[in-house]
Length: 267
Ligand SMILES: NC(=O)C1=CN([C@@H]2O[C@H](COP(=O)(O)OP(=O)(O)OC[C@H]3O[C@@H](n4cnc5c(N)ncnc54)[C@H](OP(=O)(O)O)[C@@H]3O)[C@@H](O)[C@H]2O)C=CC1
Ligand SMILES: O=C(O)C1=N[C@H](C(=O)O)C[C@H](O)C1
Image 1 (cartoon, rainbow, N blue to C red):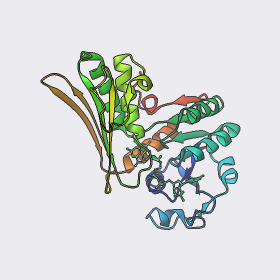
Image 2 (cartoon, rainbow, N blue to C red):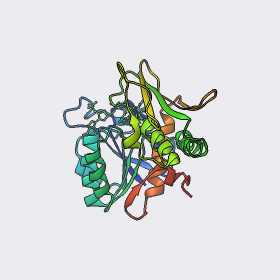
Image 3 (cartoon, rainbow, N blue to C red):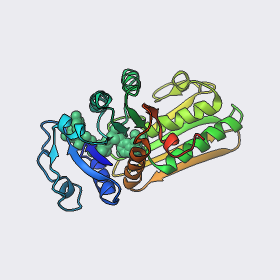
Image 4 (tube, rainbow, N blue to C red):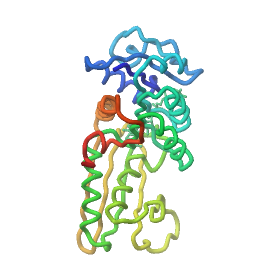
């Protein structure tokens, strides 16, 4: 399978290029960056720290995608949306790890998925997707008197909050409770907030240093508390998940799929 990496000069771009180089059933076909990026023209292997691979980082999106099988995309919501429209025209696999989408973006991605395979997840790791299944189960099994809070910490460069993973875990909790997350989410607190609303799913965001990604879901009852946690130590876990998603999506019917589909956690 011939894969293109978008955001090749970024943190996940490097991890994806390293993950592709680990395997012999896929090849890095092209590495793309935003027009005007100082990374354009650099050797993508050198940039990723694995030595020259003779694939220069380019901003020629059409040229890169037209002869590829799929795109691994960890960039920005606006860039991912533009890629989704191009890939829908070409009918290629689009693995989206980007987070921070709003409702309008989500609707546009659903339209693109009518013509291409999109695998999208706020977290591509096995551990977090298993954790989400456990959160859904715990939220469903425990009485509503157990308050649900999602706590996350990431490195100081992260630009969106709550993280895509925190929202994914919040969705899992809401599904377990049979409630709609958007109607019950408390995404931040400040000042005289009043008591906690019944049935709320709260979010708390920490940022600092080089933390790859820490998430905890706390189910707090009267006199006892359950904490379900995941700690990401290496971006390779997301990159390997994205590669697995591309291979899984190759040759599949168009649609919007999740990592739970790829990992068989919905079966
Ligand atoms: N789902 C998951 O498992 C994971 C998701 N993520 C998400 O992935 C995204 C990227 O994270 P991270 O790698 O840390 O961020 P970085 O900022 O390090 O990388 C993003 C890269 O995308 C580039 N970019 C921006 N616009 C375009 C464009 N139009 N075409 C091509 N490249 C573009 C940026 O370039 P420039 O800086 O020059 O603008 C940058 O190099 C975030 O949304 C993050 O939350 C991260 C880890 C795991
Ligand atoms: O920006 C990051 O770094 C990460 N983003 C994803 C998120 O928003 O949850 C996944 C991971 O936690 C790292």
